[in-house]
Amino acid sequence: MRGERDCKARGRLLTWAVGEWLLIAAVFAAAGAWPVPDVNEAHYLSKARHAFDPSWCEGDFFLESREAHGLFFRLLGPLAGTVSLATAAWIGRWAGWLFLAAGFRRAVRPLVAAGWKRLLAAALFSLAIRSTTMAGEWLIGGCEAKVFAWAAVLVAWGDLVAGRWSRAWLAGGLAAAFHPLVGGWMMIVTVLTTIASYLFGAGGEEPGKAGVNADDGNSTGRFFVDGFW
Image 1 (cartoon, rainbow, N blue to C red):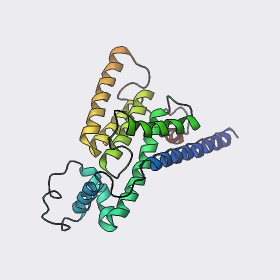
Image 2 (tube, one colour; image 1 turned 120 degrees about the vertical axis):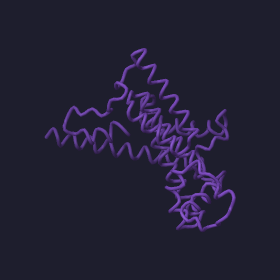
Image 3 (spheres, rainbow, N blue to C red; image 1 turned 90 degrees about the horizontal axis):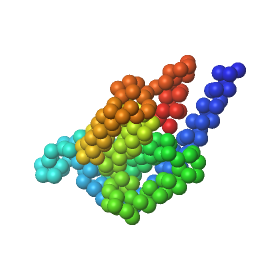
Image 4 (cartoon, rainbow, N blue to C red; image 1 turned 135 degrees about the vertical axis):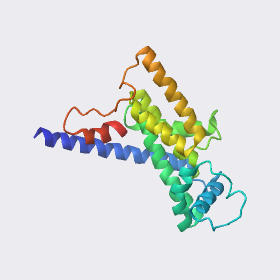
């Protein structure tokens, strides 16, 4: 009976988490659903298509220049090479908004209570990106590497706040793989935070150890619901 109740409770929690995630993604979509192509989309998607099919626009100086965002091009290349670039842009945008929403929710979870407050935080976040010192940063909007890198940075930041060091390192590495500059700065922050945790005894998981608490037989579900979400 207890196991059944726990399973139902986790199911309700997961349903709520997914609903909140989708609503946050909708907030970001409302803020960034500009006509295609948006800033940098033509460059990124063209290079992705050329990476998938080198014969497309063969000999073009820009398309054959050195790749700085290889992971993005390899992930989006098959899509950009099989559908129109406009369609690829919209699919890539939604993938970015969903990933960004997951990262944002992970980052604010230790700080903001669940429910409408997180949606308000997402709206203020999207407004601040366009109206403060972050204005012009390619975070919510077009389909490009920075969107995915910033999403991974938010995941890493949330894990740092929660003391989940192993996951923070992995997420920071993913951010660097998408965009070396964005992810590189996050890795520097992670290094400094890790050093500070050793020197000053910050709470949370000991750096270098796994962040999954397997205190019962449901560690997999706990990782998904309590960890990522």
